Length: 284
Ligand code: PMM
Image 1 (cartoon, protein in one colour):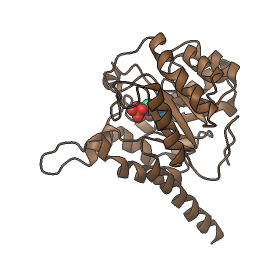
Image 2 (cartoon, rainbow, N blue to C red; image 1 turned 120 degrees about the horizontal axis):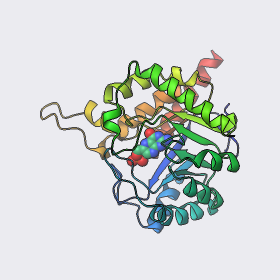
Image 3 (tube, helix red, strand yellow; image 1 turned 120 degrees about the vertical axis):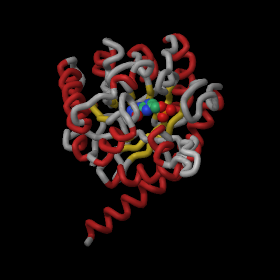
């Protein structure tokens, strides 16, 4: 069983529900921009079976621009504070050290940085000081430029090597190994083909010896997979939740520590099915 400091230990893959406090995230932008709406959404996700709730104030959709630090803080801190006070295990989705620091002070128990600490030179120190678990996502550059960075010799080997290098740098900066969680960064400087290759070879990431988070929820590659056969139109984002739940089941089976999803109910069931299946297989 995976031990991460300050987080509950589970005997199955954990479910991380998403609360985007943004006007422009690709599948739910604008829905939870009001803090009260964001808090009730987080509580609803918890009631549906989320083990953690990931609060983010900056969209990372392909091509998106950065928000200011002041705006990001204004969006997320009240939501983190209220959810944490209600007993929810909160994760803060940010690339800014200042936001991570203030979110942890407000009760967040995990820092989820899509840049793995690369976007802000102060992130490693803040993470080391807080001692909180830290998601190190594979990242090659800001969303405005990332599509041009999707060039790999061998995507699975390259992502594993670049994540290992990042882990080495974070350890050198004082972050403890027990804090680290790895994430392939689906859709970040990755084509559909790259995403599928990484999912199909998740073992290459679990082999690095740290818990792995998979965040495929509603992403563009699912829209492409499920495109209308007549028109070629991608399946709309809000109609990708069944496919997301299938990925959750397969990720859990492949040994993921957690899956990050918008629609919690389907995934909460899926990870429980996998746990029961694995238990039965162990009993023989
Ligand atoms: N993807 C998004 C946002 N945060 N965090 C992690 N760790 N991994 C991801 O792949 C990831 C993330 C994309 O945006 P969304 O919140 O709209 O799904």
